[in-house]
Image (tube, rainbow, N blue to C red):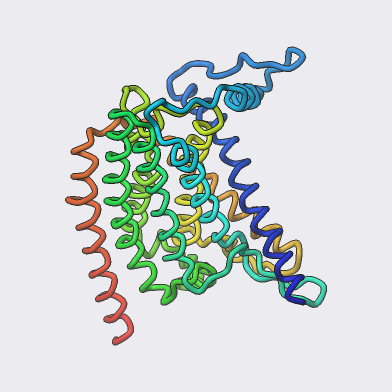
Length: 351
C-alpha cells in the first residue's frame, strides 16, 4: 500500500473511532435515562415525539441537542473568553483521541493485503492513552479558572485533585497486567490473551488479575467524574467547574464525560476481557474483521452498563472520602497487587 493509501486508511479508521464514540455517547445519554427510570420504578423520558411517535424516549436526545445548540453562548463578564471557549474543546479532544488509540480489531487479510483495525497504532499504546486521558484535567481547571466565578474555580480545583489522584491509581493498577503480558502495546496485549489456560479457559486479564479489574473499574469511574465520584461537577449543588457554561459548550462537557467512560470501558475490554478476541474461535478475512469489531463493541457496552448500574446504585461520596479511597485504599492495594504479581510470575518461570 502506498503512503497516501496508508494515510487515507488511518483517516478512515480514526473517523470511525470518533464517530463510534460520539454515537455511543448519544445512546448512553438515552440509556442512562431509561436505566435510572427502571432502577427507580418510573417511566423516564418519553415526552418528545415526532408525528405522535415517542420511540421509547429516543427523540428526547434530538430535542435536547437542538435545545443546547440553539441556546445563547454566554460568557461571564469577569470570565476570560479565549480560555472559556477553549476549555471544553480541550477536554473533548483528548477524550476523542484516546478512543482512536483503542484496538477495535486485529490484523485481517483482505484482497491479498493486511489491514489493521486499530485506528492509531503504537507500541506504547497503554501509556499513550493514559497520558492523553490525564491531559483532560487541563480542560477542567481551565473551565473553572476562565469562568471568573469562585464556585466554578472550586469545582475545577476539586476536579484537578480528584483526577490527578486516580490517574496515579490507574497507572499502578495496570502495571501488573503489563508485566504479565510483557508489552505496552494494546494490540499485543489482546493477542496474548488469545491463548487458553489449561486448554479451555481464555487467558483474559479478569481471570489473571481480578483485584486489578476491581481497582481499575473504581479508579476509572472516578476519572470520569461520574456518580459516586461527581463532586467536581456537583450537579445537585451550586459548585461545578462548568456551572458558567451554556449551549453547545455545556453539551461538550457532558459528552466528554461519556467519551471518557467509553475510554475506560475500552481499556477494561482490551486488558481484562480479551479485547476483540472471541474465545475458541479463529477470526480471519473481512467477516472475521466485522466479528472482531462487533465483539469489542459488545464488551464495551457491557462494561458501560455495569458503570451505569454503579452510578444509580451508590450514593455520592464526600470529597474527603473520594481522596481517602484513592490514596489510602486503591493505590496501596494496586501496589500490593503489582508486587504479588511480579513475584508470582517470577516464581512460575523459575519452577
